Length: 81
Image (cartoon, rainbow, N blue to C red; front, side):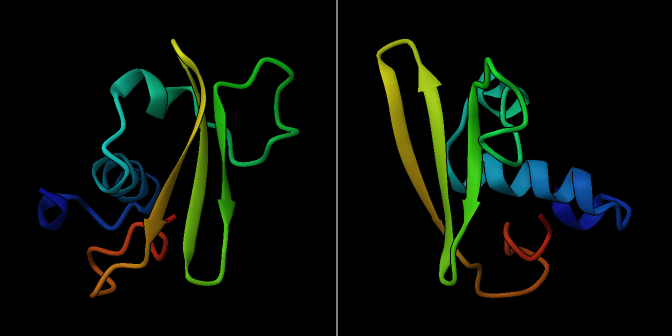
């Protein structure tokens, strides 16, 4: 699916982060890049050296999802973010 997308980094990043983090559609659309982006955030992404930490607000409260770097540039969710 990623191979069929044009080289639009935004679309690739959304698809790969959602897949790698096993995120629901509602969690993906509520993500902000930084914690301070909005007051009523649904979650945010913290870029780390070896991956990323996604903090999400769900029905049961806050949870964290770790995402590692991919084995290739084409499928790495962080390279495309």
